[in-house]
Length: 284
Image (cartoon, rainbow, N blue to C red):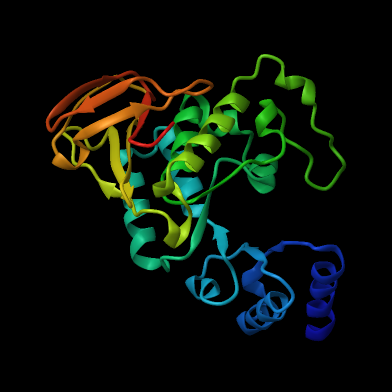
């Protein structure tokens, strides 16, 4: 059976140029199968492997990326008032300590499972949707765009039946513009790259840590500062760490970045509910 399944994977890579696989419930299959299969695929051409598994060992030789279920659940709880900014700090700290540096953890807002069984992105995240989306693209992790998100899909799609996405929903949908802008922002800022190619998140201490998530990622001269009000209440905050200080350009969805913005130690900010800002010394 191993030879048959592994051979089938090789066939599609060799004959049709498939560039990788997503492995459903990968943890239910012995690790040595995946490691052998990966080595045989790599002998044909480089591939990318995504596994539905929550075990760190699967990252050493088998998979590039795995689902960050804990990120999804934590961010959803914060959006629903069941957690706060410290919950997200906790996730990132634990992820940093437990998972290999090269592990790409997929920080997803929605996938086929969550849409069908938990609810749509708007049901799960409400007014926090854009803030959590921006965090999924700029914090440590690999973002996912699930079919229909770019069209503001408002429907729970059938899991076992054919259920075409209604693309007419994209009329007036600005979420797609946000996604496109965040993709461009990631590309313009090497510190936001995946795995060992990107920078780790460093906590920026602030005066209101239960409401405001603030962090810096910097590498090879590129620096990104993220400030997120992770609550449905206005927040006043001072950035009490010198780590935040610098001259930046502000990210703006759907347009070029603003002019220069200077952030000083003890910088005071007033944020509306779920308001967020991304600042970068990069080109966008």
